[in-house]
Image (cartoon, rainbow, N blue to C red; front, side, top):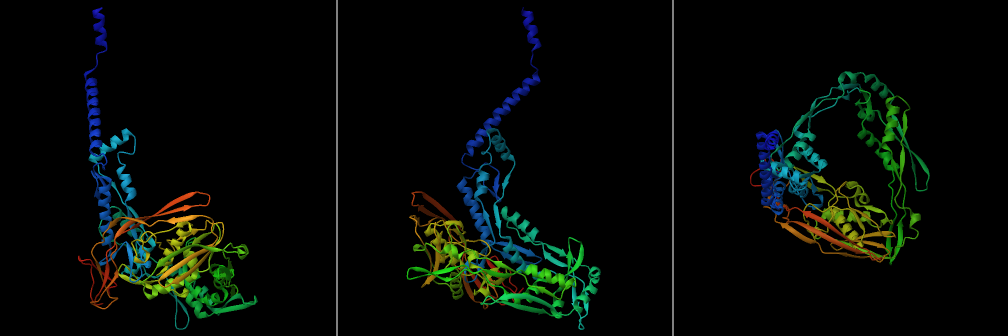
Length: 629
């Protein structure tokens, strides 16, 4: 029996290599478990090692410490701006474009976000199952985990700034085009290859650097522009050009309606010289050939006299309060607009394809949003809500624009369930609509822009919507605190076409908007019918206050040499929460909080320099603006 047991033992003898392997595996598991446990204990409440966000090593930091470090770097990036460069020409572009006299014209160019990135990085090695977390923690000991900061760029604004500052340093390009000699004979000027800024490459490089906290210069690259129309192909169309010109003048016909509802014929003769100015070549990408067309800007200019006679803007019904009663002072009016695209298509077809010597001016109706029939029982009985803001200290142009803006809104009706868009209600913002421009610094250029004062209108409208308990569909705060809109957190900014301020009438009755100025205050009122709701708008809570940096000096040729003019006061950065509590008649309570974040911004002063001086950036925070070079 003993021999049998020995035989069985010999049969199940475990190989040494298996014993060693199992032992090693067991040791590794124990070491791995101990290591993971130690790492987890050491970094409890902290970021695991080798984690970077935007170039900042946050390993071993608490969430609050990492947020502070990142905010410090973000503020530095925003304060010093980014250098964009072509050859030896440099321009510093800041997160916002400075306005010389009106903060309403400040446009955010770029910004950085760290909240979501902090959360994702802190979740590394924590947000999965035990096994995955363990492997991630061990991996982090040896391999760097890099997270980028969130980047938001206003591409339209950035392209405008780059074009304004660098276009003069590019080789001018020209497409193949027609030329008429002293005898009126058509000739062809061959196109010239040129250069354009590689905007896509610039955006990609900028986003890459910005997201990683890289302070390096963004080197702008140029792209070659080659004429699409060849001299050989264009010459084939010269006989057609001569035929067109042999026809002589061309007539545009339109019909207008006078105040007696009588149809009146109108016409506009397009002369041979105007036809010469408008004829051009273009490359038909679909058919892969060169064709003749008529320049759109020239056609619009030709059409303008008829447009003035034919077009009639749509008008919303407007009302006003007299002796506590609402009276109509403007009935709604269907508008008429010229259909430029359709009119140009018929004109080109007849002119270039040698059809009739005339074309019709097509129009289209522009309906109003308000139907007067729906307002017979308007239910406007009492004052529902009021909003106010103070514009003391505003320059004259800003006050003028505020007055124009509130006049555009006075008397508007918002139907029950209707949406109100401030940008849409204000309409066109330009000289033709009565607004005055202000100067805005974009890179090294000072450019006039319209729209100053309109954030005063937006802020007052936002406060009116808050106090009335209306639904706020869209609202954006300013980039930094503005004295006109204190207390911080109760402001709203608009900038055509975006951002906008949008409200929704959540009353069962119409709301009539009445606007006026009392001394240095803008006053907006909603008249309608109260529905038993009560609204409490609490005083904003202000926290995370951060101090601005030192004064920033900007060299400019726009003021006298040696003169200093400070355009921006120093602003503390801060975050605010504005709470509103609405108690409806049925007892339902709705609480909302509007969060605003204002970046710190140092005082900005312009320093006048000699126009002949070559201004360059210095280490003393003096940046050239509007210089002659």
